[in-house]
Image (cartoon, rainbow, N blue to C red):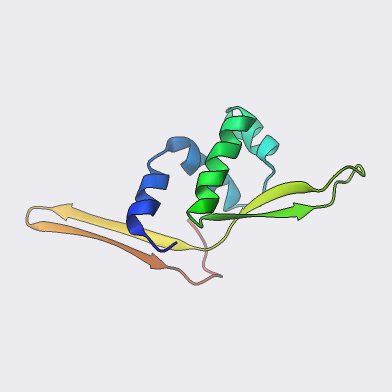
Length: 105
């Protein structure tokens, strides 16, 4: 993630935040996310593409357990933090990367 404005734009959507909340715990298939979040699979795929273009998630192909074509699974790429301080005579917004092994809370 290189652009704070892009990150804020992506995170403004509740469904994308719900997707990220699931993906930080473990990788998921789009169909799994659709069932967990209660949104159609095409909508989930659309949001995953946006998150992927913003470098918040990545996709990989895994072999099908039933012998079919490989399936696409998504995972969170990197850990980062966004902090916004807002008050009288104060406005600061910053983004920073977190170490890869840091816990996400």
